Length: 245
Length: 254
Image (cartoon, rainbow over all chains, first blue to last red; front, top):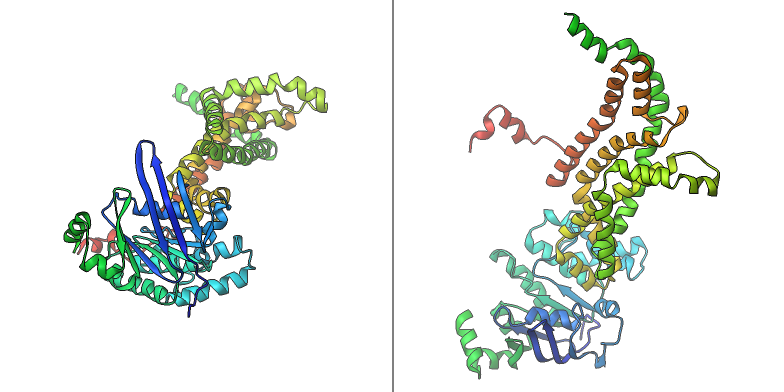
């Protein structure tokens, strides 16, 4: 049973170059509906870029992206991104708007909901992340952890089919990480399809259904977490795990 | 003491000032404000167009904005006003039958102000973190909507002080419009002061004009400081208990 109208997501043979820098060299990633895929790997391995290619913030040079089994490369990219929520390392809340306006902005301007209805839905989302009481505060007056929960509420408000998390806890003070990770785990449990780029090996191991290890723009190894963490087959993954664990 | 009397008489002849003041307030002030406010508003609109072009992903638009800005920032105001005001005068007369120099004067001021304002807006827009545009696009907003709803509003806030400075400079530059030849009712503050000074052979009316400009510009410079402070602290200027304590030395204690 799922709380979300989530869908499956597939990236096929994705390539991307910035000039002579070949950032993605043929990435395949499949996330079943309602499951969580975590992507791990050293910095510069192309993890964050992969997320941006999969929601077409950056257009791939080659390859295909399928949402619920259908290619979305020919769709309007703005409409595709309305179906995929994204949470950033630096939160990227809009500082000139209140918390509730951050969450309701897309509802008003893209979903064209009337102001009161958009606000009501935004408050509902804020309630889910435990921050309804901060609705009329400015993002700058919130802690990092609260800001990131608002960012999650902002993404969820659009009722996305898939959620992307780009190192969502990396910029947080250690004591604030737990709350955000717990929220992410709740979403995963609730049946949201999620792609989580993370350095939190505990989360990757305990919450995700599949783990993908990237290095140098390729998928080096992927599989269920037990296999990746207890029985890594490649030397590169063994080396990486030795470094981070 | 004669020399000193002479100086006082030249600059601070109260009677000469009082004589020119009614005209300066009733005629000069409104005309100066018409010139400065309308070219300020139009300059902001054109400046925003230039800033959006200047930050566009399309190279040709960036170049166009660049060339325009270089020209109108690089040429002295007096040259632009004479070229536009006198050069286009006959065309306007032909088309509309009007000989009023204000529209062309406003046009000249607008063209110059927009070059500066465009640069001000551009620097504001470019100072907004890349993540803001990215977050907005990730929500599903188009590039145009993202700029309009998220990036530009933040950019403008950051450059409000510079914008007010530009408006101060417009108030002063509006005095150059006298070069286009003004009817008695079209004269602005400077021209009224200058005419009176020429007629009486005494500079006091120009001092009066200077005071009129200061009455307009000094509050604006303080507005700049107020906005600046408010932008930095994110709240209206309000003295915190600690600030008051600092004045009497308590704040120095740990």
